[in-house]
Image 1 (cartoon, rainbow, N blue to C red):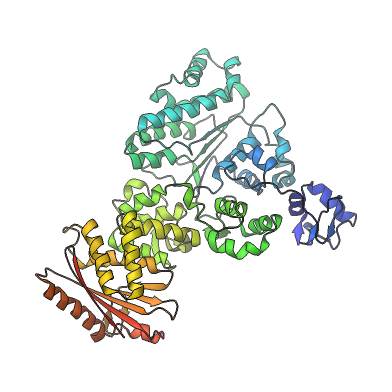
Image 2 (cartoon, rainbow, N blue to C red; image 1 turned 90 degrees about the vertical axis):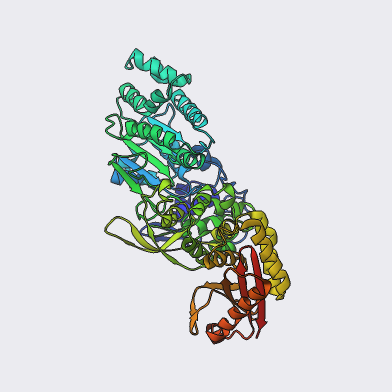
Length: 618
């Protein structure tokens, strides 16, 4: 059964019209309930305007809003998922400044533009863009806020430059555009001449860095003076230039500017009604809001506002019905569901609409929208232990991690385990479960949310472990093929090739190095094998084992030896010793207990950039 609103959106008519049709008996089997009319899922609107059940030639569907962040356009020209109840939840809570942290492409910019259109004073009646939305039915106390505030709106989503001068110039351009939206201030008799001079300096891009850092504070004061109403300040993707500063070595410059820029706007600003910010990272004391204690943070761990960024299951099922592909529900869930904001199940909205728009072909659409700079940065700091856990995540396992939402980029080198915090808030992990600790952190089980992110892990993490993507595509594929063929000569050549190109003698100094190398290579086989590392079996701990997912593949056990071997004969002896250890310690016990009949035992001896491999099939 569907609601009147859902049917109205699908048929392209007013919700009131649908209610009237139900009341007049025009929709067969429609039922009246306390919440309103419930309409059968197969109730349809034929071309002649009558509503009946059965098949008919559907009217042309609205396009999906791919890349559309303009609320007015999105809701009038495209299929729009109604998120206006975000306004109600905010007005019920009324925090002074709200920060919403969500992964990229989860609808932050569109939602912030929705808030701008709803609250902003305009020459025309902007209430028309909300009268068929859920917020309008919530009562006069909410409608009274519509169109009543001056609004300052900036989005930093495209502030991505290699240097601080270019970044500052882009920010100056955004401020120039925003000041240009408020040209009425130049004609106002409530604004002092020196303020108009300042206004013109920003408008004409003559303001220096110090003057620009006060631009939000000064504009809010002028708007308050002119309208007699304190403005609302909305900053979308506030941390995008900070990410770039960290990656491009102008972190201190951007942090210094932003600290003054935002503090003037949100800290002790008597000319502020409300403030909204969005980003990926939560505010941290060491970051740009030091001393700012009036911000209410709403993160992926919080239940508040949990359903307004991304699509809920109900919204996805409604979208699939509208586009006549309800049978794609399971495939779409497998690829793009799995996020958990608070206690709410969430789908990646960008991937969902691209999937449906492109004929329901599953691809990593979200991953292809950016360079995954965050993943690149955190992988540079990964220790051997972290790298092994990242491989475990790829194998669909949950990993226990401490999540600190206050972490900032420069803390990565101090504590590599902060990687999990950044991956979680960035959309690469989900919290399966979590327990709040006394220090404000969470102890969580984290895992990869869906197949799309697993594809990212497979590409990005293995590239990191193998040092270069070019080697991964050639040498690593050769490694996988030789394992399947049980071709020990080709296997030895593949590993030797990789060692000669990528490993220095300094790196190749411990068994742990070779273990990490091999773990990265065998991770390519995760589609056909369950990969386990350093696990107890029999009377000891094996190095790496590959448990086949299908009986047509053999089980594989690997044991490694390393040392300063002087000749091939000695390396051959060590490789033999590795195979004997597999037998003596009965490492194959667990595999046999699982019914694996054919097992390939591989012994490897490493020294520097050299490797000797022996195998035994049983």
